[in-house]
Amino acid sequence: MNYSKKRYITYALITIFTIAIPFIKIDGNHMLLLSFDKLQFHLLGVVFNMNELYVMPFLLMFLFIGIFAMTAILGRVWCGWACPQTIFRVIYRDLIETTILDLRRIKNKQKDIDYNKTSNQIKKYISLILWAILCVVISINFMLYFVAPEDFIIYIQDPKEHFFLYMFIISIAVFLFYDIVFMKENFCTYVCPYSRIQSVLYDDDTKQIVYDTNRGGDIYENGAKSIFDVKQWAGNQECTTCEACVRVCPTHIDIRKGLQVECINCLECSDACSTVMGKLGKPSLISWGSTNGVIKKNIKSVFSTRNIIYMACLVLCIALAGFFGSKKEHFLVNVNKTTNLYKVQEDGQVRNNYVLTIHNTSKKTYTFNIKLEDNENFKIKRFKEKKIEPSKRIKTVLLIETKKKLFLSDTKDSALKLKIIAYAKEDKEIKLTKEISFIYPRNDLIK
Image (cartoon, rainbow, N blue to C red; front, side):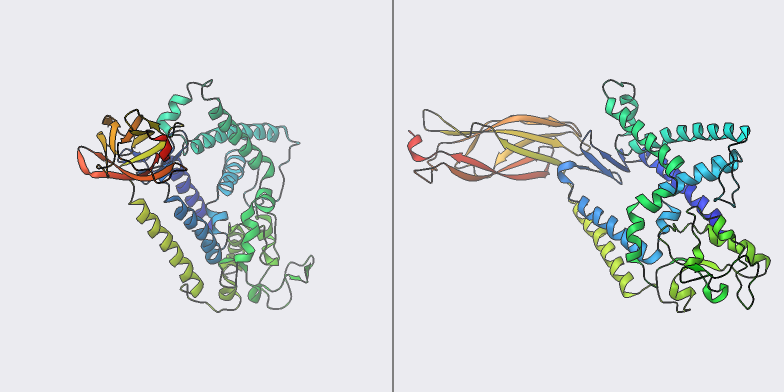
């Protein structure tokens, strides 16, 4: 099986998986969802609220270190085998334009479509309509990573209330249409930042598309083509100069020049060369390997110092993300003081007002209550236990007062530290301690 067929199978699996992810649930929670509407992040069936996203930094570090490691070890394998831009171009160019409508030849991606033929013009409009429909489908699927499918169905039925949702879908679809139809591979060459940083991550052990000059010979010398209009060289060079590798390249480069920023590791040039050299009973002159392995015949172990460090960093990121993810709370408590810092009663009592928010992040309904760690000096004046359903939150008023003389200054108010303990009555192991400030007035304000 050649590289092209392997890539198409990979594209199909990635596409199916990408479409399916928003609909996959684990214990009632989504496999992957970043909901700005509900301020939640679902990951592998675990729900994190926005104020407990301490797992996110480690996931982001894993992402960036993973990109660097993948590029340093395997080159631009992402670009050729998994990038949405590449997959969409293959769907539009190879599937719609070439396979379905027969507008192009699969082995020649350099030749433009002849629009002087009326039949080709009609086919082109059909291809644009088909791709426009797919753009809308892709855009909707993308939005399902940010709006749960069950909510999306409800929101989409009310355009006036969810106008921005429609605008996002349309904007993404329009961008995809322009990108794939008009920008084409120019996006990879001139826009994508990844292509600009890849070269600094490469070394002689990085796997990339390599033309074997030992067998094929040097086609270019000092940047200039060293052979002209010759079907077969004199000597023992194996390259037939058939240019099959050039015609099939989607980014319009000649891989025989060596590593170029435009190359996306699609390996179509290798397949083209395999077809030609296979007729001669020889292997392809173009392969996916490192400079050391292909040119210098010095194959090194994958367990190099560089690769081991990369892998250790990735394992550490996953371990830390798993550790902090396991610390997820059953409920969240937020305590804020009101604008009125304190109130002094006629009998000398000092009262502080708070706004208490309790968010039940578990899957069970609990009755939440609170108590004070310091019951000798403080007491709760106003608070009633609250029964909260899963994923619901309540906001209520909390009043704490004291009769004790706790002032620390004759000239300014004092901020005293006080701990409150919130707990679920159904399960005393589910509890959370929060430290708050109790403002006590200066001495001359106490009667």
